[in-house]
Length: 96
Image 1 (cartoon, one colour):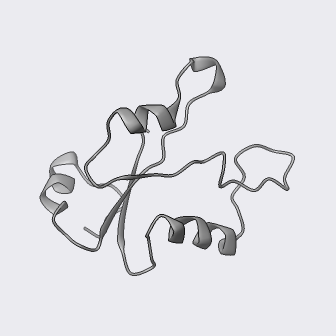
Image 2 (tube, helix red, strand yellow):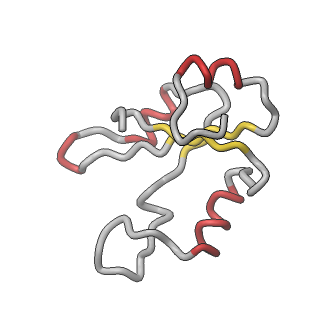
């Protein structure tokens, strides 16, 4: 799995890979009435962790959801148990 996109079937076949880390990066527009963190707790891909986009964005910017510094990003994903040696799959519940 070295491609940018994989199928659901490819992910299922890789679930037993110990270096596989799955991240739910769901986020919803405020007016949608949806809570991505709550939805994650209600159900997610087995073994997935939730990445809070609002929490881990660059709060020094006047714009929302700006990319954090490399150090801040490394710390955030490290806290989720992810390292540079892992195979990472990111998904969201909006289908993006």
